[in-house]
Length: 464
Ligand code: PMP
Image (tube, helix red, strand yellow):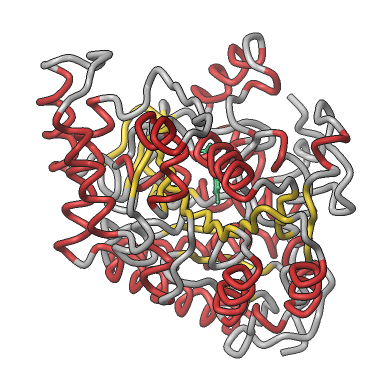
């Protein structure tokens, strides 16, 4: 265990007491997995809770503790856990086989739904993860334009592959992170997302840029928001300069609106990558976009036009279980206002939290767009009013730096003690399964957790 400051922390002690079964499993896990975990963002000191089951807005750990869940399957669960329609569709499908290594009707239906809902989707190619979808998007853009460079925005996340493995939470100078070739890093230009003019200059002056990729609501689904005008500006200049515009809609797709961020903001990219919600909580992803770009994957078009096609494989592309889950989820999202409901619940939670911060005289702020709630923990002790905090006008470096420090770890532990699981951003993703009662219970849990933090000397009462 790396739990250094734990011994004299009542919060950590109480957490250990409440989660003995998880501690035991975490000990076993450390003998199998590096750091005992299988995904970096799940790390929690002294250890994570181990979950046995989940339904709707809730999950339960091995010690029988119940949590209102805001991790939301890393964003995959817009409908909450185990939505009955998804469960039914997957159960039906797995009894008929999980892998045919053959074409099947569900993959067509799934693709047709994507095509009908996502504005840029003239053609679809399934992959297994968002990382893979972005990898293919980069390859398509380079093959289509014959150019080499990719422009990304600092802080924006596009998966863990080599072209995207630096410059989102470190290596902002564009240098390669461990294991990445410097020749690959040299082909990626990192632009500041809060300086549109600098990006426009780069795009106007250089002739070697194949594609621009961004998270269309800003890094980490609006944790570092971008001005919506950026989308329009990028669309105009990339069109003019023959550069492929890629929206990474891995999180925003089918979450911001049934047509994703592109549907909501009315700006259509050349390519969009989709994962998470697209597969209804099972593994699955897609790259989608203009026909003449995705035609680079087409045997017949390549033969008739005389070019070498891009080769593409993937054992689990459009596997039938994911297709069944995806179809059930996308249909529900199309027909039942799920995106609006999730966004409304997030807005309610942001409102409650800001009232609590004000009430307790804590100069933190809850902010976020759509179904996201982030908590700015104000590590520099800036003078801020939670009711008027505007993340778009706040320095990006400050928003990015907020998760540093022990306070976020203790906030998470104190919330777990009070029956709520949030991410370490720190943030929460609302689903349409979060009821008003869940939101109120969460607000109460925050109030109690903040008082625990204050009692432990982690929070000073602000002058406000
Ligand atoms: N892009 C974004 C915006 C993401 O949030 C993620 C995952 N968190 C990815 C890409 C990578 O997706 P995956 O985990 O499916 O590889």
